[in-house]
Image (tube, rainbow, N blue to C red; front, side, top):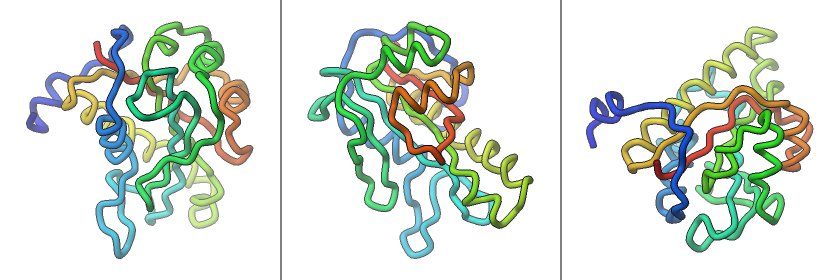
Length: 187
């Protein structure tokens, strides 16, 4: 699918079929979000002010919803293009509760959580760095939208959630502030 076609087809999708995803699909979505595109310097798929990269991606996986990946909460390591398990078990219900009880989040096989560690960027840019981090989250979100569409999947950006509840439900480190929740699945 061309970039133009993915742009034309991109929609916010809130109804997900009960189909599992492959590890290849999940891998491609994570790479689109924050993958390394140039090894020597470490550039990524989304631009970042001063290459500070204040964002981290967490992945929530439902029970039997991704082939060869058990249910749990994972941290994505872009430098190794790998997942590190943070919490075992299906946490989709808790995530949906933290997102103002939006049940379709529980229906999606996975959700990507875009978080920011603001200190990485405010060290260089002061308070303005917070704006830059939100801008970067927008770039990452659009990358995920377009990659999902090109894989025949749908997603939506969720901003209506209680930060503390999302962090607690997913056992996120205190310094990582959730900015976006993006459930992904077949529609």
